[in-house]
Image 1: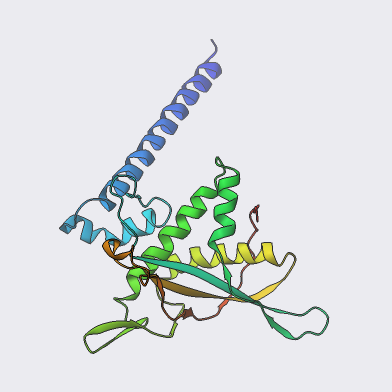
Image 2: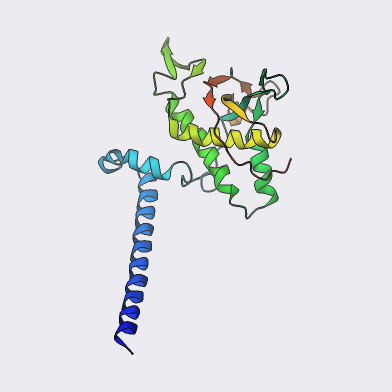
Length: 231
């Protein structure tokens, strides 16, 4: 083998080992962050909380319903509406409120192997994590008579990471319902439901209660590719 051939062979071997090492390092980092996110609170997890959340949330959060099922006591539904200009009159048009979850879930059920399940998980985790953070942010909630209440409208600056996931999913759904529409802005709303205790659900008067709609201020709409949806 010529000297040039040996050099090429050595470089190729070095490249393979370097790629193997980088992949191994990426796997170790991913596994470590996911494990840390599931560990009890400690000085380590507290100091790395921002790093863990920015990587794990919302797509790699773990769901424990299969291992520890619990009757649902409350639920949150994300609805959205868009604002655009009528191409004929130029007037402002605001769409009705749309629940953004059913079309996405229908797409996942239609094609079980679609990568859209990551979007569905991301939306579920983002909305849950977003709701959990609202109670500790004075911009989103206030205390009265010893109880915590959400404000009527929440600024878009509250938890921008999870809000971005919900907003992009909402825009993708709106693009399906209104194909070809150039939206200028989008607004999200949170619909909260509370359910009776499991031991009381057999009673006729025990019904889910819908709390007032919580609005999130309008945000500028950015282009989003609609996903394939089964209505």
